Amino acid sequence: MYWFFVILSFLLAGIKTQKPNKYKKVSVIIPAYNEEETVAKVVNVVKKVSFVDEIIVVNDGSSDNTEMEALKAGAIVINHEVNKGKGEALQTGYREAECDIIAFIDADIYNLTSSKVESMIKPILDGGADITKTKFSRASGRVTELTAKPLLNFFFPEISFEQPLSGQFAAHKEVLKKINFESDYGVDVGIVIDADVLGISIMEVDIGAIEHDMSPLSDLNLMANEVVRTIIGRANKYGRVTMIDDIGYYIRMSIVGLSLVILGLFTIFFVKFVPLAIGVIISIIGLLIAIFYIFKVIIKSIVMFKKTPGRNLLKSFVKIHFPMIISIIILLLMISTFLGAAHFDHGVLSIEPNSRNLIIYADDSPRDTISVRGPYTIDTAIENESGQIRMPSDAMMTLGVNINDTIKLGANTYKVNETRLGEPDILRLPIEVKKLLQVENGEVIQNSRLKDVFDGSLITHAYEYNNTTIKEKYFITSNEKQSSTYEIFLDNESIVNSYGTFKDNGTYDISVDGNYLTSFSYKNNLTKSFKFDGHDLEIVFRDTNSTSIKQFSSGNQGVFLNFNF
Image (cartoon, rainbow, N blue to C red; front, side, top):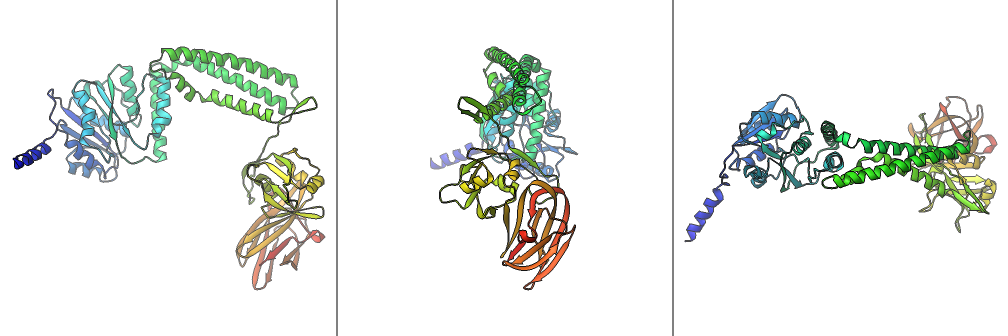
């Protein structure tokens, strides 16, 4: 009896899935492009399905051994001389297949099983659907979630598949003759849309988890473009664009109204030569237009929402109509900025918006080429920091200083430190510094005004190189002047690049460890060479086409450069 059960078990294990009573010929098309590692495995899995009569691999211009691997596995191989795209590969296989039912399966699935293949074909064999498409869990789906689903929900809200771009399909061959095959990645979503519009029954079948290579961003970008083109093309073809044209018009008019409000507010606060009354009138007109058309958008959307199967049009509307949403966000940000700059004092409401400064350098100076800086709010130095100036990093860049540099104001010298956590735009100054600079707590300083506030301040700026510290001294000037760059070479190795203004024929001192070493008289494109303690030092000066607020100290103003070895 024991041997009987063992033999019976082996016989059952060797028997393939029995063919359905109503037999129809089935072909499986496998489009493949450079899939030598997985195509044979996919073919071998499909061969285990008893009711599959034909396996065709369309080698879409592969440059690897895809063709050879497919042939070894026993598939019929049709070659494209060049890569034509997934849709073209499917069409080639579809035209050559001799069958009643066609299944399309990707060639890069690592964990494909015969049960997965059976589950997508059986509903058609059993008469449950004309087309089946698969859904499955995977770590990808970015194009589906970010591109296909929002557009489908907007133009074709009745289509609510979890994975409209699954890639695995099965269908009656006669039904596929009604479908317009796209030549590229748009083929999957094109089949879904055509089937829906033409009334072809389509079923989504869950085949569980699949594993395949994640596409790089460049491929996802191409795929997204082709999916968008296909959906928009189908929407135009089937009249869905016309259906939402009224809402589109209302949205555009809403944006016009919102834009007028923004223009009016901008005119009120920033355009001096336009009378205040005109700015107010523009804002009021824009507000009335925006309210009117936004109300019509809402009413029209509610009507369409009630008539739409699935009731998901409103959600798509919110996702797709970003221009109006962005305009509303811009207006709200502008209003919040003005409200944040409002001050009420002694019965007077004052709104004084302060903007940041966009800094763009078009020359080759050794600094950031573009940044957005300021404005900064004045506050008092915290306790026990009377010898420090806490300065935002943007302000440091504007003044050319770093943390631990020093600023001399009057008779005192103050160390530069970074702002405290949570105070990115606060400029904390000791009481004596505020008096010297004539600023008060709460005063807002634009980035462009920093040079005026710190005019005449003496900066000591340090550069570190291995065990060498180089300190340069310069004054902040409110009037920018023609600048030059200089580069320091230590033993023929570049260690410092800096810039600022020099006085023609001005005398500049250089010291080492605080002791005078040498001087030079500045002139255009000067090269100064000297030695110290076995080191070769060279300073190369070059003219630039830019200006600077840094004026290097010369003569009796102090040492220009000090080296600490």
